[in-house]
Length: 490
Image 1 (cartoon, rainbow, N blue to C red):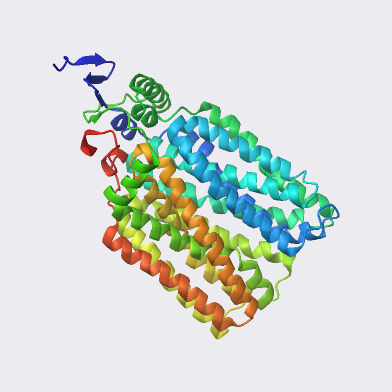
Image 2 (cartoon, one colour):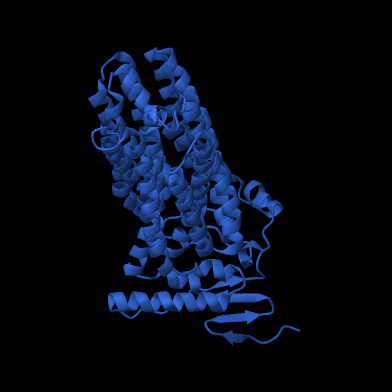
């Protein structure tokens, strides 16, 4: 016999079913101080990553001349690999824990890992200690990707999710720009001792991390995570607190909602259920996510990590001046997602992802041809890259947006981690290695073919999006990808 409906706050339960309006209440919120706090406290992770990556590349020469470390070129390369390996393993490990233990607990833990590890890097005493601390720093950043992406998407209203997610992912390049400017000052021997500059560079990340850790104290657990983990009353309480903060900030009374979601018993996530979701029920979205992530990762890592080599080898730019050329490149990368982001919410995901991937692919091919033909110098090369990556940066950010919103809540963080790991492995290993070999050959024609390969991958991703793209603009996360415990998945 089925029991009568029992009122539980704003939730109604029958047998093992729960009806909740938590998603609808979060999506109907007006933009407020609370949402700005979410963006600052969580989104600044990408600035940290950009700062780390740029500083690590800029201090490579200083690490070799350091009286204490005296790293060889091969050892410097190994530390870069250790950072990437840490990011991949950290994303997978912490991504799994984020889905199991909660968004808030993990985005504090992963920031703590990063903070301690990057501070320890500043006090490295030999190659092996430096290698270990770079690995742990990468693990913290990798864990942040899955914990933060899932939390942001679950707290930002549906109508704004595209533009906010793109702007936050694009803020990586604010960190890169800051790292480029900072490196010029820190590596100047007239300012700091050569063995002190690189230590201060890594220590600065720890100081910024402390500020972020403080801000995150004021963020709640994701009500959506509580909702699908059998904690409807806690989810209700968190939403009520958020609504009170928004009403106090805006001075307006919120309208009631009429949309409800029906959930069954909490889904117990296993690797089998994850595999079944990705490879059976959502196979086309899995293909889409893999293509988008792998293509942009190849192009980005291949060009960004070898950009300094192009400048110094083909244009004779002094090593200590490379940061000045990275700065406009970084600005173009940041402005792309910021200015194009609103169109992903208005014109639509499929249209804009297709356009940004295709345009950046075509421009990359043109730039490769101009490089081989000798039509560019260091300044015009930088200008061309800035234009190419104005569109490519929006495309890359949209890849993270896609894999975050197109899979169920129960496995969102782990799914983000899996796609991030795949993209990092392909782009972080294959791209820089290939371009490193091509640049070492010293022939511009061979490098051009590398650029054309990247262009082909971006254009192919655009064509895949035309076929498999998901129209997620303006839709609730639960409408785009029903939870595994919802009645729509039964």
